[in-house]
Length: 484
Image 1 (cartoon, helix red, strand yellow):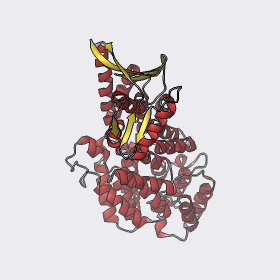
Image 2 (cartoon, helix red, strand yellow):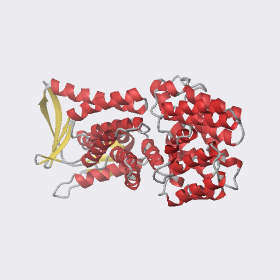
Image 3 (tube, one colour):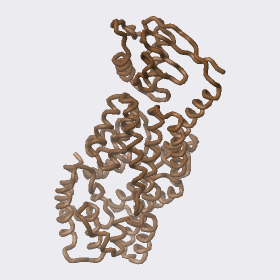
Image 4 (cartoon, helix red, strand yellow):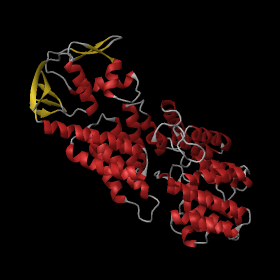
C-alpha cells in the first residue's frame, strides 16, 4: 500500500494521485491542466509560486506567455469558490500567485497496483503522442492501439480522448486518396474529440483537435471556429497555429503559418502551407524562397537522409515531404527543367520514409514528371510516368485524365474535374484548346465555396498557365482574389 496526498479546503477535497477535485462528494469539472495548477498552489498553501514555476508545471515542454497562465488562474477562480466569497487564489504583484484559504492535509491509502496502472497509462500517453508527431504511418497505427488502451484506463481524462481522436483522424488521412477512405475512423475521431472538449472545455488541445477533425469531415466553418478557440485559450502553442493554418486559407493561413514558424522555426509543413497561398496569389518567386527555407530547415539532406543528428522523431517531424515536389513545379514554371527534375528526384527519394503523405506526394511527383516528358515530346515516357502516378493513387484525377480516362474528367462540377477536363483536352489536342479550358475552370471557380480550390493552377505542369498568361488572366485574377 502507498500513501497519496489529499487536501481539504471549504467543502472541497483535492486528491493528487490521480488529480481529482470534488465538492461535497461531487466531482468538479476542472480541466487536467487546471487541476495541476490548483494542486501546486494548494499543496504549498500560503507560499507564493512564481509564474515561471506555474507555467512549467502547467505547460511542460511548451513555450507559453504569462497571459496563458493568467487566463488559466481566472478559469480556476470562476469554477472553484467558497460561499463566503473568501479569496482562494491571491495575485502577488510582480511575483506570482498564492493559495490563501485554510488547507488541511490528509492521506489516502492506494494500492500499489492502482498506482502502477495510472503511471503505465501516463507513460503510454507520452509514447503515443510521440508516435503521432512523427507522422509515420506505422507509428500512427501503433499510437491508435495505445490510445485505445489509455481511454479504457482513463475514460474521464480529456488528453486520452484527444490522443485517440488524433490517431483516428491521421489514420483517415492515410487513406484519403484511396478508393474507399476510412470514414469510420474519421467518425470515431469526431466522437472522441467532442468527448475531450466536453470533459475539459478549457483544454486548448481538445479544441484544436476538434477543429482538425471537423475540417476533415467537411465542416470547414465549424472547424475554423474550434481552431480559433484553441488559440484563444493557448495563444503560444505552435500546434494550434499549425492546425489553423492547415484548415484556413488566404491571409489567415499565411498569418498562422508565420506564427507557427515564430514559435517553432524551421517547421517544413508551415513553410509549405505559406507557399501554397503565395502560389495562388501568383507570387511564385516568394513561394520558391519559402520552400527553399522549408527544405533547409527540414533536418534532411538533399536525398532525404537524416542529416541533423537529432534522432528519428525530430527528423521526421521536420520532414521535407511535399516541399521538393512543389518547388519542382515552381522551377518548371519558370523554365528550369533540369532543376525541376532534380527536385522531383529528391521528392521520390522520400517515398520510402513511411511518412503519412509520402505516397500521395510521390503520385503527384510522377504526374509532374509525366507532364515534363510530354512537353519534351516523349509521349511513351510520359505515359509510363502517369502509370506510376495511378499505381500509387489509383483515382489521381489528373494522371488518369492524361492517360485518356474520360471518366476521370466527368461527373458533378468541381475544380479538380474542370482541371482534369482541361488536361485531357491539352493531352489529346481537343478542339477549343486553352481558351475553352480557362473559361470552364473560371466558371467552376466562380461557384466554388470559399477555400483553396484550384490553388495549383499557376504551376500546373500540363496546362502551362505561366506560358500563356493572357489566356488565363481572368482565372488567375480570381485565384488571387480568393487567396487574399
